[in-house]
Image 1: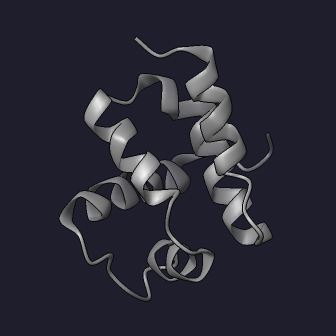
Image 2 (image 1 turned 45 degrees about the vertical axis):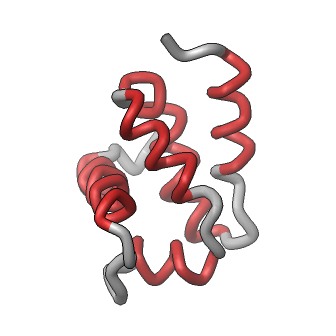
Length: 88
């Protein structure tokens, strides 16, 4: 079960130094984080430890994350982003 403190930490972690990342990560956390499996929440937490430039390259599909568990969560974020309604 997800506690509110964890969700708050991930909302804060999703606020990055790059607007492009904020526009992808914040909606994902707000709409999807609570419904992720424990394993995927751990992957997302691991992802939030990465540098902005790495995250940007992965989310723009210019590079592939070096760890398979990061590939999985990046794919989840990209899938969400493709279906996320832009007018919200």
